[in-house]
Amino acid sequence: METVLLLAHVEPDGSLARSAREALHAARELHKAITGSNLLVALVGESVQGAADSIAGCPATKYFGAIGAELSQSRYGTDAAAAAALCQAAQATIVVAPATSRWNRVLPGVAQRLGGQVDSHVTGLGHAGGKPTVNRWYYRQRIEAALTRTHRPWFILIDPSSQTACDCGAGTAAVELVPVNLAGVGGHTTVIGIREPKADAQTIRPDASLLFVTGAGWTKKQADGQTHVAEAERLILDFLKVTRASLGSSKSLVDLGGEGQAVLPFLSHLNQIGQTGSTPRHAKGLSTCCHGEEPHTVGWRFIGERRAISLDPNCGWARGKADVLYVADAFAVISKTNELLNSNQ
Amino acid sequence: MNAYHIVVCGSIVPDPLQTLEPVTTATGPALKNEMMLPAVLDPWAGHALYEAANLARSAPGSKVWLVSLGPKAKLQQVMMTVAQKVPFELVALDAPAGGFAEAADVAAALAESIQAIPGLDHAKLLVFGGWESASRGAGVTMQMVGERLGIVDQFQGVDQLVINPDGSLEILERVEGGKHQVSRCAGPPALLGWATGNLPEPKNNPQVGMANMRTAMPALQKARPTKLASAGLEFVSVTRPRELRATRIVKDKSPGEIAAEIVQWIRK
Image (cartoon, rainbow over all chains, first blue to last red; front, side, top):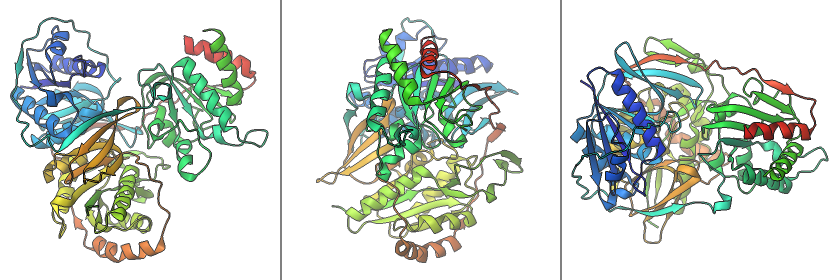
């Protein structure tokens, strides 16, 4: 009999993140598909009662918790000890968890510790021929596979934004606290805190509905034979300010800095999307001055509606990959777009 | 500064510009003409190697090993270039390096090779690697290597490592929303899965290449054949996405008209 365990960590404010609710949805669907299975919930954090109560309406039959001040922080040693203790207490055969940076760091190690196997960046769960299956991408989102495993425990990390969030109601959950032996596992590493750009310099917004992708064309010579990097910077930042879009960049544009060329100073490798960057999920994407073929365009594999502005009507980035390609000068179009957006505010 | 024994785990991947087509073989899924595809050092593992070399340069007495698992012939090809970048000693494992290989098996082979490195001092050990590969892209192998080596100070998505005057390691890891978590680790042993880091790719240095190849060629010749079992793993389907969008090409509109259309679309 399968025991499906949702394993999540609570946020600093004691709540459950959307990614955890998405993983709960996936776990619940898997539990429904496997006849005779159990659904359990295990939570890690400084305090977990509030988070457990917030999902008490879900069909889980038991709630486990690992709590303590040390578990309020994201750290391999303490998280591994807590996650392993919870999985053992629940006797889980399938562990479903959100693929947050915290769980991505630790759960593969926990799978190893418990003699299990792990699949990360899972974008879908199914059930075929009596076996649970997961979908994930290989070669940087260029090949998709569905796979199944007979080995247990099986850890499945669900990519955020790939699932519907569970909307099960609140109530009162009886949480069984599981003791965690943290002796010798946490003291060697101290979490200092989170470093983030100033509020007005933060250009990565995972929750934005629009991804704005900038390509190397912004820093190249324009029709007058000159580069206009300062103007590009102003236009892009104005656009981000008024739309609250998230900013992505092609690798070439990010790499220009390392090559000593003129750069847009607000771009870092964290903005990079594509083969060696991220593949964010947003409802819409607008690319500007981007050129390239498949390896680069995988950066917007998971973007819903896609539009592009490029001077090249045959641009491999856009043709066949975007819904609309505007053959135009991005400087002129974004300038006009900003005017319209500002005047309509 | 303390001396470190830095072991970098890094394999090879198909050149990103190649078109990849999955095929089914007797041993499971693979890439069409996989052995013919030009290969490169896995990008994030490459960053890890450059960061390792940079740290070793600033900490006299340190040494860098590159533990690489892949088909021997392809490894040799890639090492001809990689060896010219920074000084390291190669430890080669002869095994399939494709994305469909089981991460747990790869981790077991890597950990075993690391433990067998003569003279490796656990008290000085820093294990580096890419936080994800460009093939399997799972981001799980390094953690399993760390567990097998008994390392509980692990960091993933690392963009910066600073050695403090007291010998502690200050580490920046990528977290959600374009932010970094800052942690301080008292010292080795530790494992760091690198993201991009801060260093550019070093220029080729033929002298470094010649020095490296003196040890790399024997290492390649005695590369241990390694079997990856993938027990209990079954691929149900492996496909390329066929989605091709019917792109509407707008050529004859003014910037103002296009802007109006974009604004309407954004607000929809």
